[in-house]
Length: 187
Ligand code: AP5
Image 1: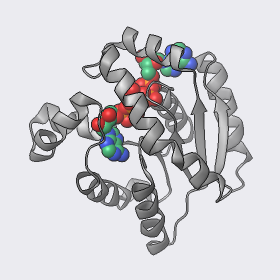
Image 2: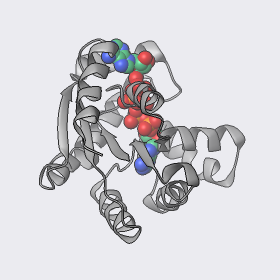
Image 3: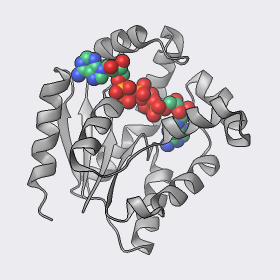
Image 4: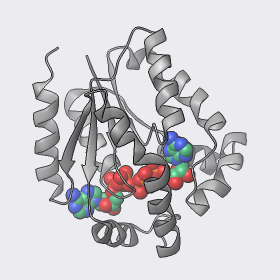
């Protein structure tokens, strides 16, 4: 059983690597960003509430996110492992996750922290061109990351869960480093 969190700034490759790793090891890739974008494209109540925050590059309020993660982790395919991408995003979400996992007798094995320079991030995201990938919103997302998400590095370091990986290399090189960490987990 493997339970992982991918941490890192916008554009650090969390989604790219999470897709490869979850495919290789057959555990579900749970991306709160993907869940929210799907809700927006389907025009659900969640999507309507989330859209303005996402377009600005702000975090969607915790009360919209926490229940989604709780429900998703209780689905059958998550019983044997999971990979969380884009959650938790702040200390409140991390604390919630910790107590949620405690309650169901689970723990996260590792938090993989992808480190990428701001210059690479801006270049990658401008090339991708998602709706929230214009320069002004990218800079704001980076600011939000520094203020609200980066404190999770210390949070997980102090719990001996954190492994930092240089994400400023080719996709394949980063994958190899991540696989080395996953393979080192004894299950
Ligand atoms: P989310 O979807 O989580 O976006 P993000 O964290 O900003 O991350 P990105 O998807 O931009 O980047 P990534 O690290 O996944 O990199 P990727 O692999 O795509 O969140 C979007 C919004 O939803 C948030 O702003 C917020 O509003 C809301 N939200 C989501 N979760 C939330 C939560 N928990 N709480 C509150 N709000 C939440 O790669 C980026 C690009 O780089 C791609 O084009 C890729 O091909 C390329 N690339 C990847 N790796 C490499 C490499 N090694 N070399 C060159 N190019 C690469």
